[in-house]
Length: 621
Image 1: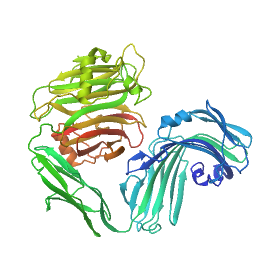
Image 2: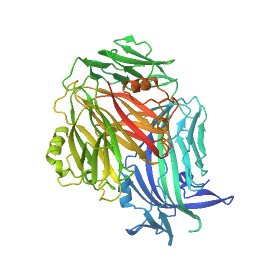
Image 3: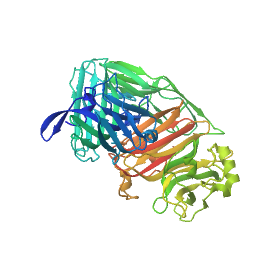
Image 4: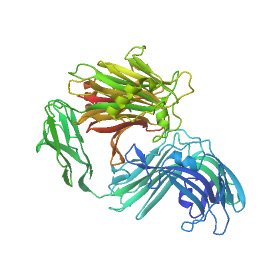
């Protein structure tokens, strides 16, 4: 065993190495950059740690009284202070972003001074490992970082590796610790084929006890056992993923997420959802005004016209230990509304450039029983993103907008620098509450009035500019007065290549005064089939829908593999989305009813494999 065991034996200053077939006692010294996650489901995790999700550590084991040092690229040499509480010489730091970590501790040549010997270490040439995600044979996820289990049953925790790492250049560790139980399993195997697991035998953990699980994956840049006698010296990037096992006994269901009351316009679709935990897993029954709804026995209730009736909706979760009933979700149905819920604006943030690298955002204007035109503010932001309060790096310096009708290569409108449209754009920004562009900037923007139909916005760089960069494509509804007969934005789509560790983010707003139901999809494998016939697609896109509630990022819904869900199929047919014909594909989708507000849909790979993916947001009538 090599590097994973360092995590447990670090404080003792002793590790055991497998080197050329023999065991050797070594002390440890390291330079490491870390990122911390909390697992919140079988296939998802979120950045997590109270003192910052990104960390740095310089460490050297040794007795009190030495003078140990470390050298940071570009900032010189500093003392490595002694950690009285834990022993050894240590410098640590926590940071809110990777950019903040890199600003303080940049990649490059470091050095450790150990007992008067200077050892060079190079912290560059690798990236953070993918987030190791564990699946559990027993239990249910009841919140971010909490897996509730039945301790009377065996619990097998398994990590499967689908991304290739060179043998000896990566390591993985599963640690479980809590009252009366501790176990540590690790491997240095070729992670392209390895599967690491540990089993907690039935009856070995205590009912009511909490047990911490820490998954650690290291990308080792250098390991040197000869630089300092008695020491292993290493530099590495490290990803940690943690969660708690909450040991339950057999128990009645507990409602963990209540259905939310909604106000909708008549003849529109709505959904209610519930989450519950119990051991064994509960069954579900939905009720309308206290009466059971036939066939409604899942965690989601889909009500399409004309079955979306005003009244009280509840759900009961039941197992052999008892039952729990949700609080009542009240559905209010308005016969009409002067300002009904709708998609108010759409945006996509990703790389854009010239040639084969345009950023293309597709959208459709219309809706059933609508007539007339819709006025839209369309923007291509680059310099805006580089300035406060966004302060992003690598932005597109001089974006150009082209607005096309579907199927045409002739632009309806185009803009390079928005100053030529300043009066109209500034007025539209004020009425739509868009973040204002800076006068004289090289951002692109235009105001256009469109008839119902499909359109696309393409963002490229100025032909006289340089390279590609991060750009934001935005479409805002600038309709002055709105009724159910007014054309509106009814879908958003963006096809993009996503890097192995990247995320494609699509933002959308529910405007108006009533809730609106949306179908959100992330297609990868489906793009291999007609009519797309694409190669190089993302094999396993996972989808999360987020909202900012009281200053906190909240995941409202998540999916990693739609599983042929009949409600998704039914709704996709209703909104004329292209069909997913493979019910076992790893394409992902969520269906949810949202009150007015701002939301984001994020697409990334479950296994950390790069590829092309399509994100879509549909209004469900």
